[in-house]
Length: 145
Length: 116
Image 1 (cartoon, helix red, strand yellow):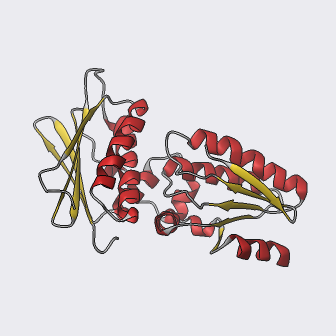
Image 2 (cartoon, chains in turn red, purple):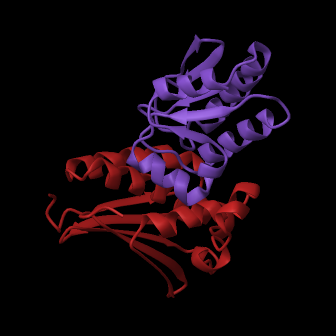
């Protein structure tokens, strides 16, 4: 398993065209950490859903704004943090409360993405600090959720 | 996409062959919808084999939803098979177990189409 100090740090523009680069780097990092495939795959899903929601519904009015992604592993837990300087945006509150049946009927909304994030991870937390949104998730490696 | 297709017993079987996310969801949908129409013309079912589809994000789920809506007014049944643990979990979370009949194997999906 990766050393706790091996943190992946990425900076991206708030554009969907950046998602491929992020996915590829994140996938390589997670594979290098020898994670179970189920954990790796769920984290790839989670990262895309969060970033898509930030780009669509949160960040950013200024083209010079960026989104930072930090990923690390410690004591069989993977931590991911997404930081952006856009308007206050908490995806946990603003989407994802629908039932599964409502999600099937309303796939155009961001709700299903947040529902996936909530159910595929062990903990989610949003904070707003110094004008920036911080969205963090944790995923236990053993046993997988 | 690593998309391949087969026809067995009048059923259209499609193999997306890779994870479905932002990069290929549009391509996935553009292949899936015509497959529903082809199944309708042949009078069979559409089987989606998710072998090698390690995961799918919500844009891929949306494409599946479009396929289900395309099939709704027809007699086409959509069956899915070959799902790994992550895909089964995603289907469960999203409620897609209600939309699609899930089979453990392609053979069992084909048996099910033969029984109807």
